[in-house]
Length: 231
Length: 146
Image (cartoon, rainbow over the protein chains, first blue to last red):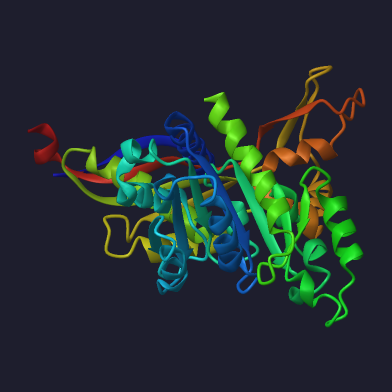
């Protein structure tokens, strides 16, 4: 005989996602790893910026103390660029999903050797899928979320993406060496970003020429060191 | 926005409950409560759930969606109230505010004041999140009694 049973679930799936991100943060904190997440549109220069940061990091940290997780819809191009520095790296292909989610990071940590291996790492860099909207909505428990926008995207980038601007901890304006050539008013970009998010420091950089990288790196290093001593 | 991600989370919870039910044959109904402050589009969610549930025990399940109106409470004087439909429309018509609320419903409280005492110390009682209330499962009586 076939009959019907009712199962009460009472689970909030949105809250669940937030809780999962919090659990990830606890995992990072227990392992003593600082997680820096880079977010921004396609072509904003996230990978090149990370290359410059990793080069600078390697003067202060051992090669096996740094890990990189790269998220892309397809290809391993970004991770190949980072792999040449010899740091630990994992590529995640989301296969169409426009952002990374907590299970992607859990899988990547497993690939890095799990929670035990995480303890040997000081800094983990996550490069989210190139997209200036969705990744900002799905927290991954990172200690700092770094929004990368470049001048060639247009000077109204921040006001067009108020939420992304607001939820970021650090704002990087990349490709500043191009600003004069394409008639971009940097002052306006800075004041827009400040209006939306008065708390985030803003860094003007050119990942290509190296301009501003040292200032950005020093700030990231304070986050890493502060986190390490708190542990 | 992101209804597919939400649908996948719902399906995972439904499949868990299904597996834990002895003699379960198929899921016949899924009851969802969608908080209006989540600004989740119920029809997009229904569609996404249909797609992700293909070839699972929930593929023919009826999807019942109840929209939950927001309710707020003043932490200073204890007054509780529901916003009018006009107030809700004001939020969903404002592209900046609606995006903010969609991502983190809690931000809405910084835009509210208590209609009774004017305090801005306000909390959300209900109306956020996407809750799976319950599901109906068809079970084979023989299996469940064994």
